[in-house]
Image (tube, rainbow over all chains, first blue to last red; front, top):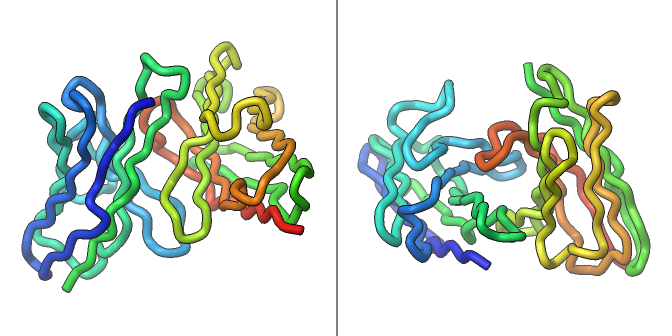
Length: 109
Length: 116
């Protein structure tokens, strides 16, 4: 089945830009979605279909996807952005289409 | 306002069974695919199962196939997960989530603990 690979952790200073990657075989051919999860809370969709934002999600959150890597970019990082971030695809060619990456802990220094 | 409320979690012995429910409100339930996603303590998200709006398409993760059954009752705006032959590794918070492909709405989850 399809595998998504994320770095376990990313650290960034407030006001800087955080980039969280999600690797997968030819992931550029799939739609990638990103979730933010804070401790004790349910996940929240922050980017869908590679680069679209649900209503209410700040423009600081953006996404891109090409080749074997998708990237979630958080500009002007704030302390409140500290959370776990997960990438996810729906692999429609598989009998097990729901796939999550292992997650990345974003630490705001 | 979209609301998803899970229930039915609890402590169960290995080999036992449990049925989770997810009550939906604030949208036309019968028009949307629904999903179960779980998270073991201190671990990442794991997709468990999905069901299309009319129950025509059902999918399971390999880790639960043959033991878990997803179903829905559109008349009752409810999603279910029947879990049989439970194992210690099934211990997790179970979330129901709405939508096909990207899961736009999530419940707060219900904790399932499998332990003797």
